[in-house]
Every structure is written in structure tokens, then in C-alpha cells.
Length: 142
Image 1 (cartoon, helix red, strand yellow):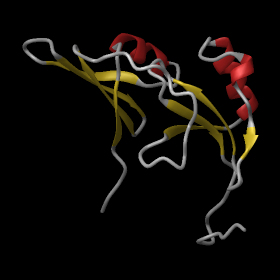
Image 2 (image 1 turned 135 degrees about the horizontal axis):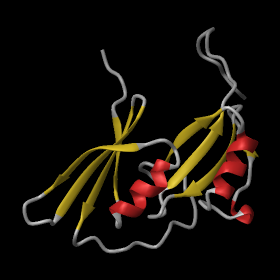
Image 3 (image 1 turned 135 degrees about the vertical axis):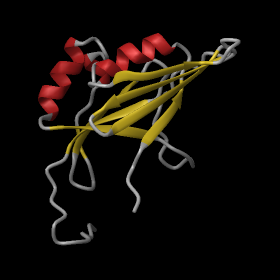
């Protein structure tokens, strides 16, 4: 009955965001601008994933978040799945999306391997290598 449709982000510089997310295979499929140019809405798509970008002309640049505070209520990040975390790390570094000292590959408590980067507006993007299988139903860890 339900299937996941999209994630929406408000961004400061829509062109910088389009360029950033293009590295992950997301391409613009829809652009809408208000008559007075106060708002732009861009839909980026890759396979079945939509990322909706809102860019208001009156946006104020917000400094990048310094931490991904999971205890604070609200959305924290979204993730891209990869086959190889090390290959993804090399790709991200070669694309200039992060500095080597800012990428720390970790083993997650739930069995995944991951690292985080930030988009141009400081939103947290998780890169995940997930080899888990859930074919037998609910798993309980710890």
C-alpha cells in the first residue's frame, strides 16, 4: 500500500546542491520557479529515489552542523548504500566531497559499515555498506 517516495531539503545554493548530488547519480527531472523568483523547487531522481530541493531567495546561510546529534529530536541524515565502503571512500575523496581526515569508517552497532559526509548546506549524508540479510524476520541485537 505504501512505498517510500522522497526526502526534501531546503538548500541555500540550488546549483551547488544539484552538482553535489549528481555525484551520487541524482539528476534534475523537474524544475519549478515561482513567478517572483522567491522560490525554486527542484526534483532530483535516481532509480526510484526522489530528492526534493527547496531554495528560497530569502534563505540565510546556516553554518555546517558540527555533529550528527542522534539524541536530538528530528531528522538526522539519509544514506546511500554502496557495495564497498573503501571504494566509496576513495570515490568521495577523488570527487573532492570530503577530506581524508574527515572520513572515519566505522562498524555500526547494528551490523553495517559506514561513514558520514556533509552536503554543501551541512546536511549529514551517510555512506553505508550493508551486507545484512533480513529474510528470517526481526533480528534482536544486544
